[in-house]
Image (cartoon, one colour):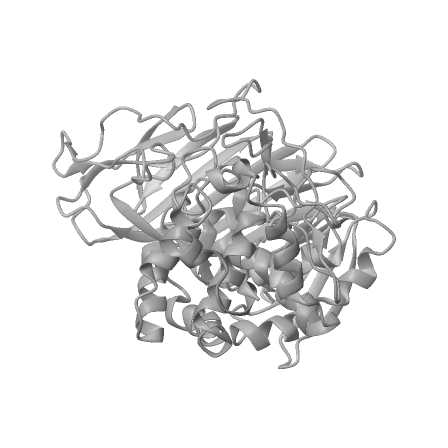
Length: 527
């Protein structure tokens, strides 16, 4: 979530950043300008609040294992689903024993009081081979649950911090369909501090009195019950009822069959039919204006411009289609049913690649950021990481996309830019100390923004442009709509080229020191 998460805005001239610590979403490092080199800009890291926040009722995924509930025998047959999906970085993130196919969130929200009342219906299936007698959903405890049904039968439930523990009336058979309906209400909020030095994430209030959602790795559970981990992607729909005078926008495309609203209220519905990770779902409620258009193939582009958004936000929104055209030349057909952006004047310190419609907040709303977040629609949104240790598959590629954009549109000399960075790198131990893959819990959103594109440019020069650009398109064409690991990518490169680049890739992406001389200056970079 944080990018991806905290983005630097503009590049600083002729200086190599010695350390970039990212707090939340997409981080855009430096972007080369035509014919010269500029270095990534700095991002000031927030203070970490550890594995839980000081805010009452808000909980982030722990980086230490929780109770050993996975595969425990249930009292009514079946097993007890795990309270974590199995990610070693965040053992209590997500849940086990089932998979989600679709979320349908039906909410009513009053902006002046921040009062939310909702029913979320989740459809999926049981994955536990022994069936399920109990399972969990993730939901922040400041949202109080009033009722739960499982397959249309009332279920018992217990809110244990950020875990909603559900016991169905009877055990669920292995591979059986699963429909869960949860009714709840409360005052949604951000997860303060978060983990991995990511800053806050979740339900934010705007300076104009509205609200929006952005957060990674935690954000979705601040407004609906969820299996909160990228390993379980799902389609998404939201129906929102708000007082008249307030507008709502979410992911995907608007639905035409909107239910009638109560007197003094207005209702809108949105649907995203492409499965994405839960942190990529968003909603924005405010008195915003819109900028609309179409992609080259006619798909709709719709952006929301908040009342406090910077003066240039609308002009930036109008560039969305042109940016997607450029990126499609690198990555293949745009994978989403719609496009656009949410431009908000409030400051969070990061932008986020929420599906179809990234969130841009004050200070992280320049063209580089737009390129980065739209690149994520392929790398991160369509192809989804299996584990947080694989985040380079999102962030390294989205960060390199800004280089490619500058090369294509402005004629930037990327070799010159790369060499300028490398001229300062041999003594920069901090730059090389962190690997780009499996960097350790709490360190995922760091070097991927500056070292990541440097490593990808080296790989490009090692395997050659033809092979590299073929991989850029073939990877999302092959893994779109799926989860993938960096191991998968490494194998993909070797299979695509017919050569073994394992040692080279390991030196640049898994290494904790400057690559050995035989890997350090590949191809034309050695001239």
